[in-house]
Image (cartoon, rainbow, N blue to C red; front, side, top):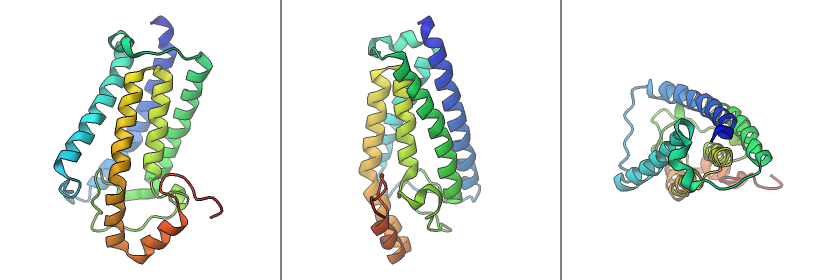
Length: 198
């Protein structure tokens, strides 16, 4: 496990930076004092999503602290592929900052739209409607490559799958709030990938 140290350091740097950015913007959004309910999301769904997230964070922390704990789930990857994960992670950390600074105080951790929310169509939102999820996917992919670990990868796929299932409900709430403006925005942007020719 000695040869894991550079990969663990790289992953730690990426996660510390990304988590710091996310925490900063979450606290900034929460400063409004508005209470955000998870009822629309569904309490069971919210619990399952958070358990999947806990598994992802737990397995990632286990890799960082004591990789032998999850060595049973490791798989062979060439070092150059793992370092590609580091590059992807660093780029994704910057994308997270760009995404959250563009979103501003609209950020929530559920499908609820804040009372004072505005329709954000600048920054990465100019090309895709959910750049936060795209960025999260890239970071999870980066963690999987750097750790070369199935448990981290499967946990990440589960979290992303649940977020994808939740996305139509989130978009319905945005339509209810912003009406035709959001429908027009949907017509010219892709959900997770940019629309070609737009």
